[in-house]
Length: 125
Length: 110
Image 1 (cartoon, rainbow over the protein chains, first blue to last red):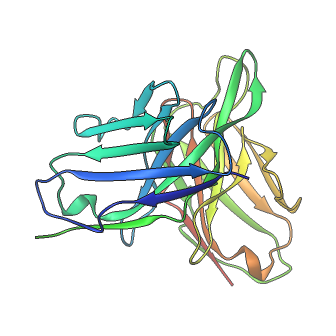
Image 2: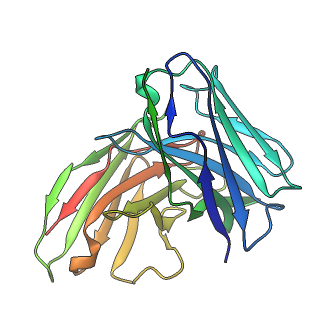
Image 3: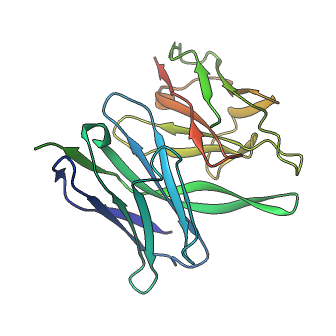
């Protein structure tokens, strides 16, 4: 069973860049989409974006201008970079695997079936 | 953007009793394939989110059959036939038709 582990600094200064990495173990990074979800304190879940192991991406419209997702299959890792952060980016960040769980018509349907434990990121000077 | 609205936001329940959570989308979630593109997730206290229901009505692996998903168009429902103490947590619907958007979450408490 695949396991995911987020890593990165817990504290980032406003206007700087937030960088997180998710390491995949116990399974292959190839063949899947990989996503990021965050939960600000006292609020609900917010979808951030996803990346295919080939590098194709899909970003939340609200974060698109500041967000870059990347993947390194040789290290079984995928990463998130969020620029010009503010206090509103303070959150627990989760990485998750998007797995093809069904076939809907001609398409594979993907859902987040394996999640990391989450990492807390605080934006503060 | 597709906006997802859940109700209620807080749901006190009694063990053994049924529970129902509503999720409404700002536009139809019907895909051209004929399927409704909606998932349900739960985040239990101290845990990461976990998948409950995918593609509108399919239970994820290991999910008890007391959980069921239904609905059509813009109105969807997650039902728990008999609530157990372990079901406490925040339940989220998420549309997957146009990028992805979560609902605000419904806190289920005993």
